[in-house]
Amino acid sequence: MKNIMNLVKILVAATVLLVIGCTKELLEKPVQGALNESILTSREGVNALLIGAYAALDGVSSGTDALAGGSGWSASPSNFLQGSIAGGEAHKGAGGGSEIPMIPYQRWNAMDPSNSYLNNKWRSCYEGVNRANSVIRILSKATDLSPEERSTIEAQARFLRSHFYFDLKKNWNMVPWVDENTTDYNVPNDQDIWPMIEADFTFAMNNLPESWTEIGRANKWAAASYLGKALVYQQKWPEAKLIFDQVITQGKNSKGINYDLTKAFQDNFDAATENNEESVFVVQMTPNLGTNDVSNSNGGDLLNYPVTIFSCCGIYIPSQDLVNSFRTNGQGLPYLDEYNRHPVKSDQGINSDQPFIPDTGPLDPRLDWTVGRRGVPYLDWGVHQGKAWIRDQAEAGPYSPVKNVHRQATQGQHGNYTSWAPGNAINLNLIRFADVLLLAAETEAQLGNLGIAEQYVNRLRQRAANPESVVYTYANDADPTGPRSTTPAANYQVSPYPAGTFAVQGKPFALKAIYHERKLELGLEGHRYYDISRWGIADQVLAAYYRYEADLTTDLVGAFFTKNKNEYYPIPQAQIDLTTSGGVSKLTQNPNY
Image (cartoon, rainbow, N blue to C red; front, side, top):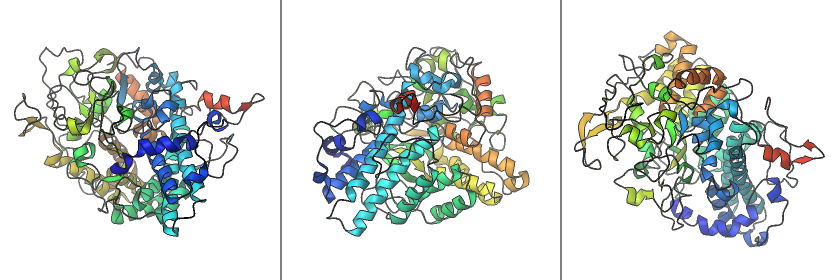
């Protein structure tokens, strides 16, 4: 698929004028220079449109960044802003005067419908929806396709369409449904779109092949995994179990490899080990398209690097609350409720030229593949230097993100330095098998099958305990790209739950353990806010987070989350204004905004 993605810039440049936009002001204006649809009603034309729909997955390229007002990071497919910063996994960082529209995402009481980043994300998602719709519409007019080709193209388009609708649903709940048959785009948001999302993923699951020669395409099991996740969000537990049982026992990635966990946790965040057995559906990234930009090189996360060792930008600072979650007790198990009573030692307020000894207590090794902290190897970029690497430590804390950062040894191959901020070739996991296992564990626990739920969780904890998932010190600190020593970089202790723990402790404990495991396994991957919102505990979790974190940094003082309001984002005011006629808007604002 990466070979195909290299053609995206050319193909989409020719077709994007036909499919661009799904906001009212774009759709109601004639497009100068647009292609006649008849040119595209062929196998070649439909496939070019389909590639353009895949291209929209990166959230920032092929016209979407322009639609997003030049700030593609506000529409990043990683949802680092909407999912992780908003969910208490990270601070905005970079100082209070930088990226001001991001501030309300970490301080929910400041969230307002006029925030431009809300509108950017909305428009980016509907850009993807409209490209998928264009594929389906033009497909119906093409005459040189076999029935099999027609069904697999439609299945891919419907898969992509409902990926974007899933993102819209998670963020705003009630959103307009626009499909290939829509002619009046002034659509109200007065219906629940879950049934349509389910129908699209079901069609895709039933009509997509198990494998492709082009790895980036969605396959049968990616569609099934998305369907299962959509069912979990609706708390349709028996239906979700039927899907997950199939995915876990029969599922394969697009290479035809059976789903499993990688031996090493960190292999999911390295361009050298991508598209592996854990990859369910990923956004394919490549650094060298010859376009002199980073849009297809994780451009949505280009701000999220330590400011000193990269050219930019010090955004996305992991929270102390997240770091403390990785503390383990004497048995290698997590503190589910009291982790902040066992804080991990930090260098907050300590200059980099002053001595500092990192925490010596027991920790889950996934911490150091998720968060960069002083005194511990930061991939192969050297030992993290602490405050010198942080743009404003007092404001946001002393840490750095790790999962989105490429390796120094392969930066010539996997890095992209053509823009003012870096990009890289690390594929973005939209769903990986670890996520599927945890969703299945949650489903089994809700159905009372606590033993199965425990088995799924323990698969993840056993992988974390694998010596291959440990961070080791450098054999020579002067050469961090060289061999590693055999000495762990910290006191790593992690163990599976003893057999029968979930059954003995009961369903509430099992669910709490599963919820915490999602935080550990999927930390800084953009899931947290959506999880605590769908669990109905966002107000409790964020109230505790603000109480704790506001004593450590200056950026969260006075922040609060309002129940029955902030579980969803406000509908962008710009979109409400566009659909207003005679003082009445087709779009209804979410409650209490």
